[in-house]
Amino acid sequence: MHPRPPILARARRALSEFFRLEAAGGLLLIAAAAMAMLFANSPLVHAYEIFRDTPLGSADLGKSLHWWVNDGLMAVFFLLVALEIKREALSGQLSNRDQLVLPVVCAIAGVAMPALLFTALNHGDADAMRGWAIPTATDIAFALGVLALLGSRVPLGMKLLLSTIAVADDMIAILIIALFYSQGLWWPALTGAAVVIAAMGLLNRMQVTRLMPYLLLGAVLWALVLKSGVHATLAGVVTGLMIPHIDTRNDIDDEIEHSALETLEHALHSWVAYAILPLFAFVNAGLALGGMQVSDLLAPLPLGIALGLLVGKPVGIVLAALLMRAAGFARFPDGMDLRSMLGLGVLCGIGFTMSLFVGGLAFAQAPAQYAGSVAGVLAASCIAAIVGCAWLHLVLPKKSAS
Image (tube, rainbow, N blue to C red):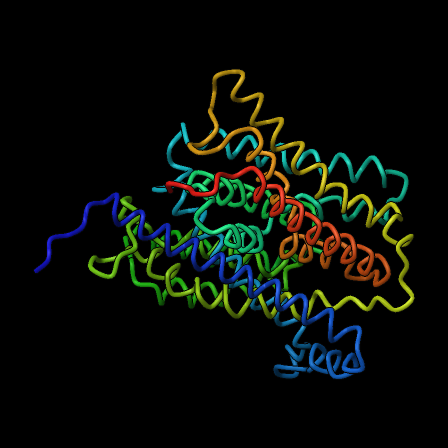
């Protein structure tokens, strides 16, 4: 038998695999969004709409492919997000106070500043204000995909800070969706959901570590939450937080026994990165540009989203980092200075997946406003990707000792 590798080596291997998956998935996400725009603005637009609106399911759940992706497959995405948050909180970057302070404060500032900018431009329009949370999210896969274009010049500390900010950002986004985008609550279904959650908690108390009971209960929970008026994807969040994680070393390695959480996270990661998120991008990013003019992007709704992502995100994150460093509460990661921190802040303005998702919730019954929100998200995310990559190309050293 070979001796078990040191914990540090296993952790580095797990991080390398995580960043490889996220970066490759991010590039695939970009390609899927570009293809959606191509289809939506070509003679193939009718075929694209037929594909997106294809009915699937039984009489009770006979919904379009678009609906199943947004309410069904995205629950799996949120399940993975919850698994990552729980693992990071128990045994990863969020478990160490010294490593936790900077990304959490940056994430909070990076949510608050875009929301304030959006509100400043749209406060007089109650309907538009439903989209205040659209520019508050960061797309980790897209952002890491852009970072991957810079290769080994990107210091490991920057990747870790970006991913940890994005995880904290996702935690805030989940709370926002639960608190502000639930409507028409049906209490019998909510009561049933509470019973299912209690059953999961009981399995935890009984130290049941097999995945199947949790996944079966998670499917029941999804159906109940779907009927309750709370968005169905939150069932994925609750299920993920209930999956046991006992081994606090956080070492995903083929030579050792995984916790149930690590096993499921490892199994889902490729499916989410390479299938679910690209499919989500393809069915949601197909914005028809016919008749749309540049002046349309200057309307308060898309402009508020664009400025929130392009200005609010980097300003909030960089100011928070500078204040934390000046107060002595945190320091920049190894290999990063103010210039590279600014580049990271710009990349955090890539909203995409979560921004499009929140836009769909905010303007589900308002197609014109939804189109404006998509335009703002796509324009801002593309500009943030190009400007952030170009800036980091200029300021990062030619080689990084990561």
